[in-house]
Image 1 (cartoon, rainbow, N blue to C red):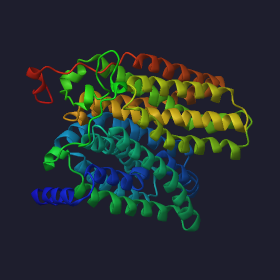
Image 2: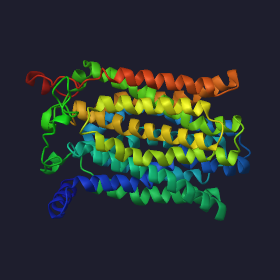
Image 3: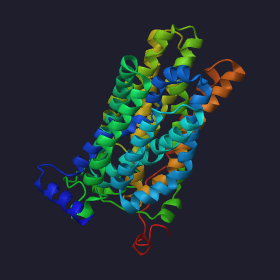
Image 4: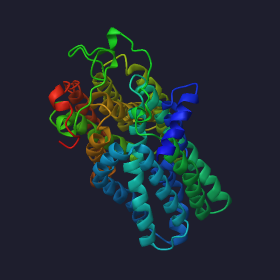
Length: 443
């Protein structure tokens, strides 16, 4: 381990740029490989060939996604503590190895139980360690330019989810679905394991470096009008660190937890069922599918937009704005029954959801610091993943009962709108007193 640390340190001093961008670059590589393997967008291209060749039902096939997400609810707090203790590099490297092995194993399944035994833990790794590990690694290395670093991660994730499923469809068409799974496994092993273990250090201080050593700005717009603090917690981006117990005692912690759960519930429910909604409204299925692509593509520029504002406007105001965009677009989705409003509404949902994803990742690090970020995020990730699991189920049952998506989409609009209003009360927590700030992370 000492030799690896020495290698990183020598590289950091030899590079003409900040080593944090190596961490971000590793995230880009993983977003084009490991991170996409167990995503729903990637699994969607396997639904028809696998169910037809195996004679499985689509319902049985889809159930593995929900079960994997449910498992992530329980493992996220544990993974969060590991992130703080061992660093993201170990978590990402081990997660990439396990994902690669699972993907290769899926190429040889012949029974539903074998599929569940492999895909459920793979989905759990996707929803827990990978979703937490990459943003945590970037947040630990950046303070002043954290919005930019997270925006890079956000754009790379969107690009991976757009490119990889398309590439796997080409492989399935040219060869078969088993070859596609093997390709995904090799991709995860090649780009996710060794680079993460060798290059990703826990924090810059572990290598004798300063975090994000860029000049602090003194923009008055960065100050929270009520507290006199920037979104990072104090003027000039000075950093504070909360223990887990201290974070649990703040009002903002619980507001942000509920906000992330409600926001991701709306995101998952809208994104999964929007194509079905348009088809039920009489839109040609070929045109209805455009909404899914529009939704995904709109999230990429959204990352840059919300990141550009994140150091100029208090982050809670941006969270409210992003929520209102999603709510307004959800209402537009309810009212859409032809192509042009469909595209506009899908773009609006994607643009707002892109803001929610980036801002939720940003606010935890800005409000509570880096020292116990993994543990704090692990606790709240359970709420977030739980919301993502509930959204599609709520929409599905309400559609079965009312034979329409209008009511569930209206419900999501109201829920995310109320969450946005509630976010206004999530002011930056007061810095811990010196006598308590040095307590161990678990107390």
